[in-house]
Length: 140
Image 1 (cartoon, helix red, strand yellow):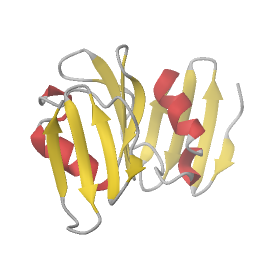
Image 2 (cartoon, one colour):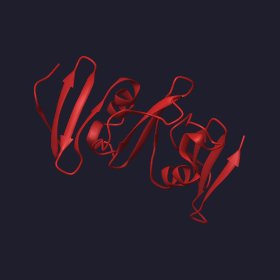
Image 3 (cartoon, helix red, strand yellow):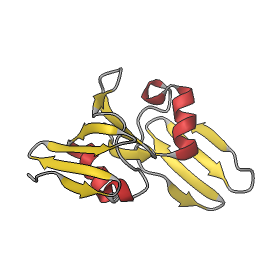
Image 4 (cartoon, one colour):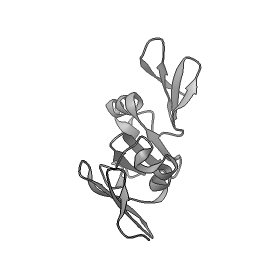
């Protein structure tokens, strides 16, 4: 547990069950558990995700939780763990219906592959091609 402490562009307080982060741009939001742990491993607000813009929130299908951040989202389910979804992968997945799409929850953060990057989901993959600049979805 901490008192109010400075963060890059805002403030935070850690509690036994999680943390509250605040910035003028994002407001004050709670995050805890595996989502908070994943965000911490990425470098907190300095690691590219920025500040949380929502509290930890159950997914509409009640099979997991998510928190949206200034630079992406972290989704968690008991079956898949906590994974960050950012940029075009996040936009594409969102347009498909998030975890309710045939892709389901993310199972791995994005990673480099020959010619681009890829992100794995329960039902398939999203791949970005450096040569075309496009993201394609493929079923498993």
